[in-house]
Amino acid sequence: MTFSLFISAICLAILPQALSARSLDSICTVSPKRGDQELRLKWKVQTKGKVFSTPIVVDGILYVGSCDSSLYAIDTARGNVLWQYRTGGEIRSAVAVDAGLVYVLATDGHLYALNAKSGLLRWKYQTEGEQVYDSWDYYLSSPVVDRGFVYFGSGDRHVYALHADEGSLHWRYKTNGIVHATPAVVDGSIFIGSFDGFFYCLDPDGKLRWKFNTLGESYFPKGEIQFHAIVSENRVYFGARDFNLYALNTKDGTGHWVYHQLGSWISVPNLYKDRLVVTMSDSFSALLVDKTNGKVLAEPPVPLNVFAGPSISEDFAYFGAIDGVLYRFAIEEGTVKPVFQTESSKKYRSDFFDTNGAQKDVLLSDYNGDIHQLFDAYHKMGSIFSTVCIEQDMLYFGTSDGIIYALQKPY
Image (cartoon, rainbow, N blue to C red; front, side, top):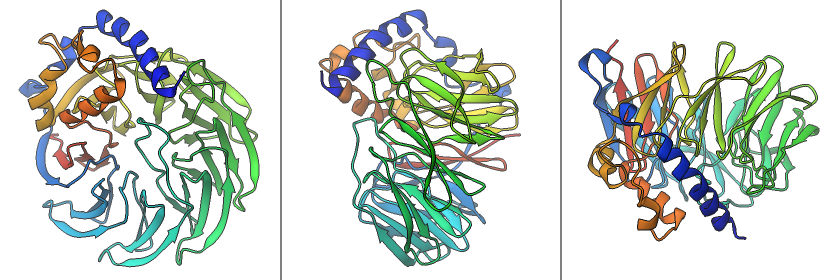
């Protein structure tokens, strides 16, 4: 069976059950009452391509890439574009900013280092090239700078370490799959997963310290690792396409616990006190998990798939979904509510949802049973694949209709 048929089969199996169980009308009403303190739009910038990239703010400048192949530097105060640098390919990763340079990876297989103030090219490094695993491989690896080196994964199956100041190769480590996860670098150790289904811990010199093979699942026997991990104390946490959330010991890669979410890829975890906030691709929910034992503490519903990670501010986690709605997870209460809706979502959401807030029963059949066409159509709603950047009282993110948003909290 082909991969696309795997996806179609699993979505057909999951979606009717999820939709019949939840009308979700209570959380799909995306016009909060005045007392709910709705986020206020401060500014927005229109690009010429989809925005999957996560924005980064440094010294009052927001850096974000677009699938129009350009990296944008935007004044956070007014939303003015200070400079724009055009690469040779789409930008689907976040940037790293360090020592006056901004680093970004593009689908042309180059890592670029630009002057953070002027946007002038300092250097660029060519990998063996990028490739896309499948229709749901939305992101590239984001570079991470640590101790004078810049680390990133590549579609050429390698993990790279370059000298950050001049772009020469320090080392590279070959896996057996595409590496689009972002490395987590802690105390010189590099933690990163691959589409080969292995999670790797590399020493500062690029030598393998340990690797862990995910369990796999009938639809996804490799247990591909698409997203980045987080490290807390002596544990590393990450999700995979085999529907599992893993907690491993950072020292030797032995297991601590595994949580299985039936029928849904685990996207990205984030840390809140002694708990993990987790987004997922297909279960139409978010998770609050005890990080010590993997016990689920809350699972509030979300109307549609989430690929973006949760960003935490005080007692709330913010994340967007592919319905073009930004959601706020009140962690202590275990509830999710909508707090912002894109203009495209307001215009086109009724194409996919009925008046009760549930997905239309005939939705997949309208696209001839082709799940790829359906997911492409979702982009009409200004889907939010970008993880929210929170800076003081501001929230920044991009959408698949090419807009970069700046929202201000009213409190």
